Image (cartoon, rainbow, N blue to C red; front, side, top):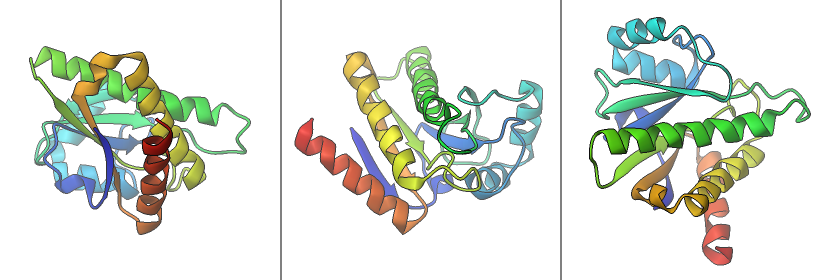
Length: 179
């Protein structure tokens, strides 16, 4: 299942939530700051041991005081002009996060797993919202088609802003019609 909802990702009790992280895996602004604030000091201490994360990659931590089980931290690209591999790096964020979610599912002998994504790179990183949405949905759909076993992962795009929620609803509807 791939869907969207409008809300605060930090309050969700899915198996995994994704943090739109910075490369140092330190508390930041936006969703990153909210996740660190609600998770507590333990998250910051664990992230310090991970020694950062390259753009497009993902790392997993415990969730501490959050209701989810784990947090995947992915570092989205800073949008410059669309000619510096920004799209490929954003695609890698979703792909690598889903790969970690699949590993988590297998390691914990789960039949299904849920993962909630925020709008990666659209805040202060400046990625155009509509393009970022299209990349997110297309990447997840492509991965699910290429690796049918991954369909046991329920993907939820969690949008804090109404504008983003409308974009994801519209984009997901296209795939319902066209497959």
